[in-house]
Image (tube, rainbow, N blue to C red; front, side, top):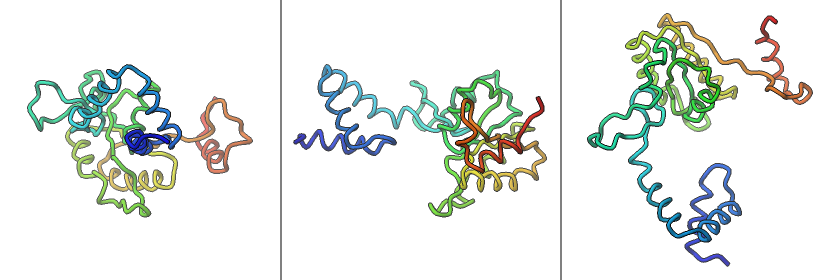
Length: 206
């Protein structure tokens, strides 16, 4: 019953994570009920997004191009531009949204390096697909003394962490892995065996 244009936009919206057909249709119908200027402004900003925002040339985080910067100029993110950050501490994450999750804690005082992907043989992602040479070069150039490996506690995340350990240990830096265990406010009876085992092995003295 929906017009073809509405169905087409709804179909495009379903490509977003967590957006199904019904939700996408509601979004489009909601926009149609608003002031037409809202649709035009949203469309304009979305069209400009790929050129305005891209990966930071230093760490891979999201960075916005400066308005007066020449085309092709390197983008530097807010974290890399922050002089208060400790350049000797580097946190390696798999994806940008992992970086955002760590930043929300307000406890990370160093800088980041985004791999962009995790090792995944099933998806055809091998060691040569990770930017390890760039990571090693940055560690050497910036005098990094400690690296925190913050890949997720999944099969791909663990494989990536082990690979990073093999590649980075020869550099003589201190390596650590983020802990994983029972979430705050969670009930022990619902924790799976792997999570509970890690919670026990990563226990701290009271």
